Image (cartoon, each protein chain N blue to C red):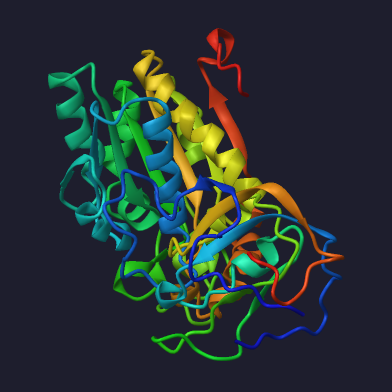
Length: 268
Length: 96
């Protein structure tokens, strides 16, 4: 089979249809592990911000996790806050600058383990902010320990024999809980395990930004992301492992859309 | 450049697009291999400057961007040819 030299752009007449990185990322290099799903999710978020023309009108509030390293790479206004407190900081920013799209970038450890009160109270108040939860079921940043969203049977650094409901408790399915709260206007769960899911997630992210801007209340956008290092699996098997573990508990799709009736988004 | 070729689907007769791969930033996660609809990406058998295996492109790319979307390391750039290449008449020397 003929291997093609892909080190340089083609010499034949061709049109570039996609760049290496989204334009809101300052450079491609990052220090996250091979097979990590978080850069894929961050690419989607940054591309949607550009599509919605929010480039000069958004602020990102990061929690603590591997994704935090992107604070130096993303070309958006951003701040880092205490563990799990991103929705509280977002509340203050939104109230001072109601016309700006305020979004938090958090992991499942940050949101469900460290900051459950903040996200619940922010949803209860119905703040018009967008909260992203990159859910991989482990504290990836500290080496793969169990979080509140680890699923039953999941092997982590401190549940070597698998999470046991009797000993470790049951996972908190935050999206399902928030979907029952009147203050949350949009709740959805996407995934980045394959190209089809990535495209579906992109559409959900659009709504997750639009609904709070239209005054429908808090949007929770959960995105299942791979963490092969934290799961002790080879990088290439991360996507399959995720859908066999987290994917069986956390169903994909929209759980709530308070703005569906007024949706004039023609590309859906 | 060498590639693993076992268990491969036959190459498509037409190449509609191509990619630029920044192999030295690749961490060898292999997520792009099953993501490629025409199955024209295979992993190398030799490492890049960091020691990781990296994807190699074979004829038949459609320029669909699936590899770019799943890649966590942003190593793909996608082009679509103005005129597709007929692979039944293409040779080793065919200009890319």
